[in-house]
Amino acid sequence: MCHKLGLMDDACPSSCICARDSGTVTCRDGEDSDVPRDIPEWTSTLILKGRNISTLQRGAFMINGTELEMTTLSLSYNGIQAIEPYAFLGLTRLHLLDLSHNQLESISARAFHGLLELRSLYLNQSILAPATTQLSNALSTLSLRNLHRLELAGNSLKSIPLMTLDIYNLHALVLINNSIESMEWENVTNLYQQKRLRVYLSLNPFRCNCELEAFYYWLKNSSQCPDAGRLLCSEPEGKRGIPVERLRREDVDCMNENLEAVSYVFLGIVLALIGVVFLMVLYLNRGGIKRWLNNIREACRDQMEVYHYRYEQDSDPRLANVAV
Image (tube, rainbow, N blue to C red; front, side):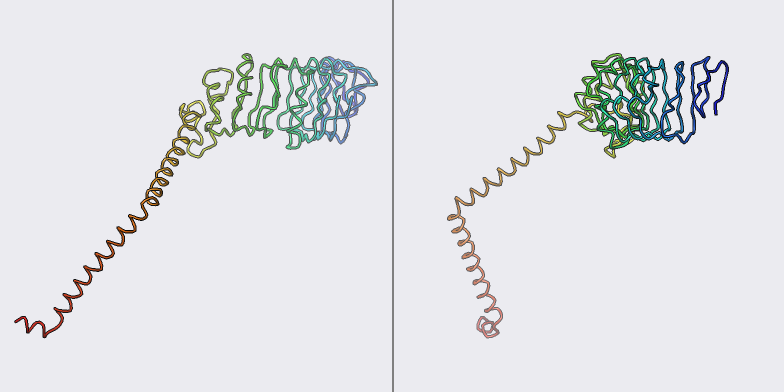
């Protein structure tokens, strides 16, 4: 069924709503497993939602080999599981791509190839565990060098899935509600170099120990994290719920932690050396110690004989009468 709003084109896809005056085509809640093949050439915004599109195939949005003038493409809530190479071929003018709330298990390294004008990419709550390792390769393409905003909230990511930041023109990186516990020196160094970049990191389970040192100082000395006040410690238990930026320097000071560990090791070594020296002294003086022990034993035996003799005298009544 074709719904016409305003000035319409007769080629509106079945079960879609077309509005040529705004250049918008909206297709919702269908059973189709493929992208509509009869998308009008005048489409600037395409919204597909609630469909059953399990795989985005190569050239899924090409119409008889013709490139579309599309600038916005929303594909949220479609159950997409895989993105094949060159899936967005022909969308050279696309500015915004929303793939949020899907179930991506496979992402080709060339999935986003050809999106030279893409400014915003949304992948919120879409990346399943099997696709996590593939995501970095897919995002590393030079086709995304003009990307301004990248949203990856709610994907259980443990680190920033970007091999480097200098190939992008990123202004906003959203990593809210993931599984990030710490940041490595390399990632922090990249963040320092990208002064224009704003990184959103709340609702991550930060482990507030020595490993967080580099990130902690970046957070204290930079204004690149707008939600810094909402970053909370998850571990250790004694720091749970404490804002990361309110930690004391000694809480994340690797040098102090290492020195404390070294001091315990050194104390153990000293005690071990004292024990070894003591055993060596005993070994070297074993002859004298043996004589000393024998002398003590003989002295104790003589003393016991004296006590025994006196006891016998005191216990014999006849000896008592003679004494009287």
